[in-house]
Length: 144
Image (cartoon, rainbow, N blue to C red; front, side, top):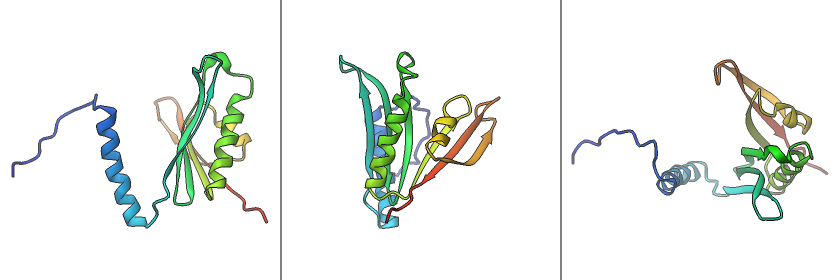
């Protein structure tokens, strides 16, 4: 067998990247004994069906991660972010998630998450230069 070769492939097709990620996820499932990973996505669409907002991530092994939160600039200021976040949190809780994690920058929306009960867990300065990346977590309180 010849030695593997390393090369830059910055434009790797999404399908191939997804297949590789699935290999990682498969290993994670095997190592943890948890195979309950599922996408968790809410999309806000205008009358034409165009996406104008999204809250997207996943749930797995008692946690959820919000990886993408966005509202089109023309639609901001109407409470859409809060509605998307509330829907994401409610679905994560319904799936049994005990914690929800999110990463945001200081110039994005840390206040939105804090208002919704997320607590700052870490602040990484210089990511990007001149700013911070803030890691927040919301603990789901079980009712009853």
